Length: 489
Image (cartoon, rainbow, N blue to C red; front, side, top):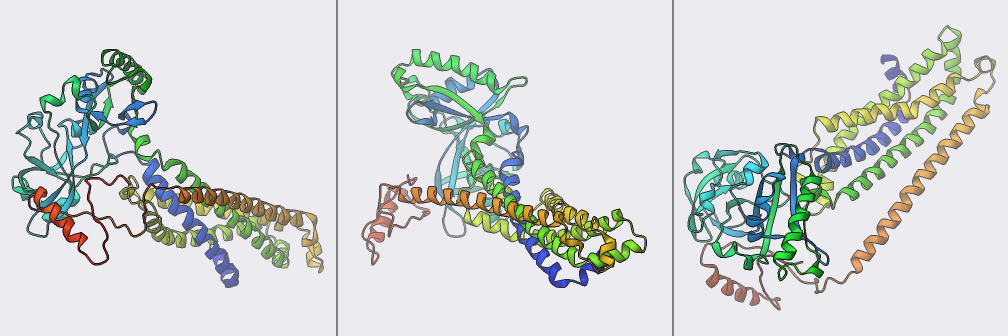
């Protein structure tokens, strides 16, 4: 190792070019691997996450849809292939504390949600089934982020009362981690079960998201088979709700697939692209190593004449390559730390599991492996080729590098480099073409000049909202103002 570093110090320009090239390539590869690991490879932070499934109502025309409270209570909770099911609904509210009012995401969930996920609150408790009954739901569980941001992480907040959109709610617990399903909320309230929403007439009042845990010994195929029987019965018993031509079926997919299914192909394609970039870097460096080996032929011949075997010389050159790769990999990790933040900032705001993306020990191990493998990849062939030269000709002043083998190897490396570049260019062209088509899609409204934002109020919504809209309309330059609970854009 010391000999290798001493040799590299004699060629600082060459070493610098190789190290910087590798640093960029390994940094890019490690950055994307960090995202791939955080989103696709790491298990969900729940007990036996592979047993969790997401339920849907599947329709021939509309695809997957949400579920009504009546369907959840009468159908999903009766499934034998699951050990438990849970439901939640979207909501929002205004939190009024000592500071300014804050608009928060407020989920409404059944008491079974945390038991199904297999997690426990950090403080206090979760909801009880009794608190799902109308009139008994004036309790709230805070998310960890909101608890730290607005209550300074004080565990004494459990038992206190907070004002949520003008309604006093008692804090009964604090979550240890955010529940990303992938929907995430700042706080949670019990999902009420009014009797009129449990009737057959309420089956079409859909809006719930439902998950379940497979029972011990049951598979997703078992669940699908059971749901097919239930779906057929529902189409017969409630023909007005599930018309025959609507193609209704109950459906379920693994929770992880539901959370990251949309980004999985893109991430793997991006990872493949940066691996190609790394291979191109190795091909380029391999050519540089061949050229450098040519310049060192006389040095190697002298060492061989003094008794150094060909294997020793090849090993020495390979160690030099790995040293360069390790230094480049170390710099690449620093680039990756910055690159991960850049990728997350460039990605969509609702990227699932984004908080789990980080440069951890597994990512560092990947960077180390990529560095060593790269060093072997670009250093092995030049080392073997250089030590196979006719050393007697070199010592007599000849040029062993004129042999056909190094020339063929250089041509092969150049051809590989060009081939990899063509693959990347072709893929980029297809992506740009697809992006152009997306840009040309008519969204159905005029986005130019439109501004969207959220507000929180600590007074009666029905009286403050119209007044707020009127004040917005009076802002200089504003031509119109409106509001919705959830922007369908």
